[in-house]
Image (cartoon, rainbow, N blue to C red; front, side, top):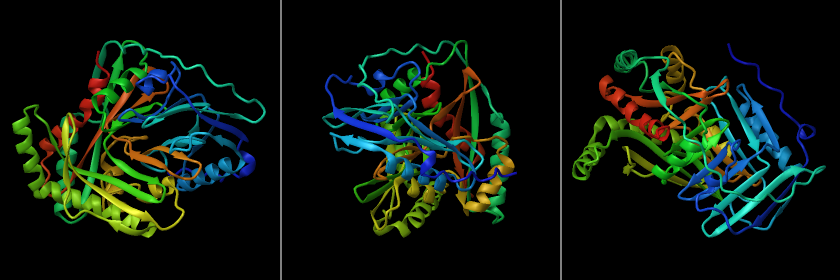
Length: 423
């Protein structure tokens, strides 16, 4: 049963915030080093990005209007805020972090932290955000070391590997019969520690091992995703589409041969074409012009290689980064084609709630610019048990899919989080 749509918040529902961004020196080489023990907000890539802590304002939403509700709340919040931005780069000034679950019933919301430490190139800054009635003093930045997570035991989540492979085989039969063209099926793994998990530990390991990915932390959802759902920056819209995966072996010569086979694989090229087409069709109404590559390139990551395409366009209207993310979600890369049929099939056979996995996660500033990625290669901390996390991975299923190969693909995609939780 669907949840009722929430009432859209008006201007009276938002706090009046005072925001100040100013350049600073002495910021640590790794922004994540500044997160305190209760810090939970991060967005970093190649050393740039921002981390935050505290809560100056937040919105929790659900229902079919969740994206529209969030955008309306953000417009009201930014209109009521007093902002002094002495930095003037993307990510300075008033910023929110956010994550949205895969379905309308999954958790979603926006968070405005009290403190943000950011870096972009050679520019570093601190932003303080507080109610107008109690102005915040600039924080003293410290370097904080996370605690190791202790001994970790991994166990099957909703489905065992064998059960999940059987579901894939059934999906292939449905695709062959013409019921659906492509469906993305996910599985989960439970990580259990013998002590509370300090999220800063896996975050730092993810950022170090996967510098070309976007390492994120929002509301207990952490990960390092390679897939940029959408970026809007000064009128330019970009999206990186990934679909088609092969596991690396660690042997450079062999991996080059595997990359070449991936680039020629009819099964993977078909899966990739579905994903690119869905992104291009969703962005087209919002772009004056678009560049959609005819052929993908192979993106090399430490654990896997993906077929990748960078779609770019010039903005034609005032759609915010979050509005563009809403138009794109769920893309064929996380759901399937046709979308409605694939979504129904996922609900029927997956046997679990994805929660925030495979939904948009990212940040946005007061102008509507920002970055939203797809929450992949990630884990969700259990809000009721600090020693437990759920890890997620999925695979795109098309007519040529082999269940054992797809299971192996999900195992490869679980490697980043499994390794990040290690000692």
